[in-house]
Length: 125
Ligand SMILES: [Zn+2]
Image (tube, rainbow, N blue to C red):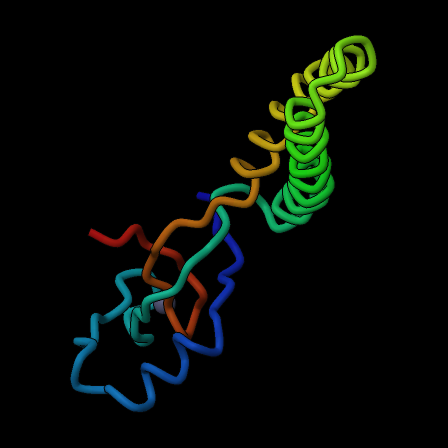
């Protein structure tokens, strides 16, 4: 069994402290001593998630920039230059879009329950 590293946000921790009654305590089945707390972990490993951000952020910026170029090209409506610019924008866009999607998928998180004693991760039902 692969135990993923939990990425618990400070927001979640604050909620647990201010609303302790809201979250029922569930005993850990693995170590029989710890409590399972809500947490979110990356679907992939932490390293792949970081790679996901590195792929997603530049490709998102490039896609935003290309959208701007296409809009400017359409607004200006000067045949030769605009068509050439839009052509290049579409080609680069076709490369950046899959990169963006891969990056997005790599950094997706899932909601789990994590033991505060042994660190076991259980899927949240
Ligand atoms: Zn445990």
